[in-house]
Image 1 (cartoon, protein in one colour):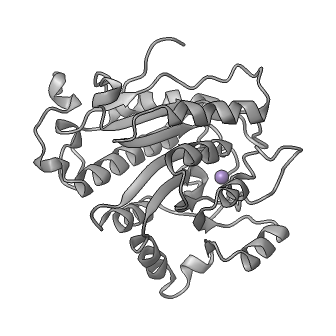
Image 2: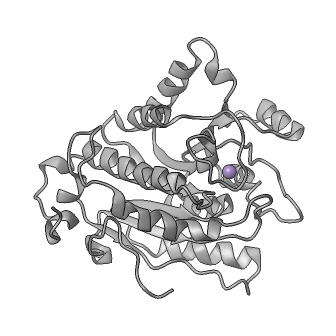
Length: 307
Ligand SMILES: [Mn+2]
């Protein structure tokens, strides 16, 4: 697959000019239930063709001002060990320019620690939205399993704010109880009086470097049926928008990177569309929070015939 992917059919900006870097990472090694997440990055980026340039929540057309580059896929020819593959991913991302919004599109959730290691080398906070605890120290013989990223993020020295969680192992609950660096908002607790508001308050008050990891199974399966390990319960679309609004409503958030992982393309394509629109929202809110509306209209949209 050598043909390059494009976001919303815009030309890819040169690396050093791009405001947004989007890295497709079709990693699929340790999924345990429904296969197919290796097809997700391509399916999601191709679905962006169906988006509108206007983004209705922030009320602007972000790509009039922003340039994006969809990078070549980070390939896994399945010859390396897990350790070598994740080290190579970390080096690959560390070599990219940093004066931009970096978005990794997975692929399985095991990719997150390599991205965080590269983009947030000093201690920060990972906002981790997921149906599952993902805190096992190893799973099916590998600490690089998609069931383990939280453990690896803690080992890197980060705080973790987790929400949407509704499938946990007993030892994961015990880890949270003795680990002060984890703030956990269980999905069922978020339904309690005032709990959703206190979660949004927590997101709004994050300080210092922040990384956002969105496992698409955090959504209710009626919203996103196409995930590797679906769980009943979970977020609806406008709840996710509220989380993003809480994250970006304070100016100058030091957002080091984002990933969107664990999607599995499905026949209705609702899941891919939801992921594609989620990327547009993140880009729009980030751009608005960083004042790009007042920047010159030299973005990718201005380089194509869009109407
Ligand atoms: Mn996960």
